[in-house]
Length: 619
Image (cartoon, rainbow, N blue to C red; front, side, top):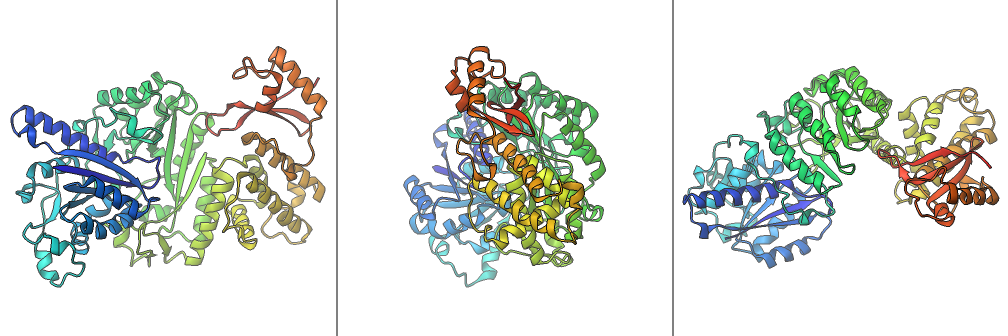
């Protein structure tokens, strides 16, 4: 029997850990039981994996599936691919009428019967944890399916080609009677799942995902992870050996998919200590953590690590205490803020903080405060997301109480609530884009810090940028990186100059406190800040108009690089054997604030990718 596990990822660089786990577990257990003569070796199915992306056409995937001609086809279903999978389900039986289709994954597990009623083409759904269920399905060969825990399926006598190709079911009552659901499968020992990365070829140029625990100790109302309350951990010695595999191969990044990695102190410390002791200087490890669970021992260890060894994703979601309580969280934001600030002060950890718009009791005023509270912590990334009303979540149950209006299609994103209008949501969407461009990109750090002092708060600043983009039709157009600098300069010139001349500045602080006092003064101040930000990230040789004339005379630049060629006073690591011409191409000199600054692009900051900047003594 030929079995195909199909994954449709959001991007090419993503991989689907689930299908690889199912394949590895089934093959290893089959071999083990065949060795013990419990099953016949020659009946072992051939299991293959096919990974696609949502950017491919349905036709492309259909053609590939047809060429493979699987006897059994299993789709891994998630929020980002379920619509795509549904398109394929309607077409596959037309070209592969003998192929049996099964579904699995979070997007079909909690409404399995409804899925089968909608799609007569599908034989069954594997609910929840899939490794053992998938293996039992392979062994059963369509016999005694009712003995397999964790599945919802059609009786064989009604599952035939005519039924599968008939979109309109005329007898719903009879159809429901033929759909059977077995008992829930008991959680398995996570250490029994084989390591899936023995062959790294399929994962070249892709993000590596790794799992050291399953389940979540929390009950957040918007999340399906809270449904799995059985928290399990992989054997730490096994984890160490597997992480060493990545370390030895200098994999660029490994993302842990554990829902709250640090929910057990000894587990987190064991892994973090191992990574610190075996650091290869290259590999980065990503963890999703609860900041308020980090204790002093963990923080000391984290602060001692190489910059870029680990990065932390922290879901704050809101700082409104009533909202936090309503969504069943136990976070104390003052403690989160303290710990995030302490970690940040070490200067070695990338922190990614999340907010969710559309939560109960969070109106625009409240979200304005939440945004400013989190922004003030200065994480490397601030993600402004929007509530997804997931099927099977407690949030879905409360939709009527919250007057939640959300899209019918995945990802079921919020349109409005009792506290937030659709107009508010549109406004927040624009602010989200401005935060991505001007904050998360890391391209405008010093300019935005200066600008914030004028507006008084970050939310108002990004809201003004949103309004500027919309007023000038810039929000519907793609822009180059350099183009973003030019737009920000145009915003500064038009928007701030307008307020400088107004007698009432309701949304801004006094310019007398924040600016030099004249149009020429603030223009020069922001020109220098924007130019500094530009050269921190970009080694541009075609100077943009806003930066003005060259600030370093040719003779001074020539003398500097001539000296560096022989003395290497400033340019050492990464410049061995380089002549003055090569050094000039690899660096930039700029005069800012009366100082001659050298931007070194060979030695960038491990966290923010900014060039190293050194004040140069003039000849």
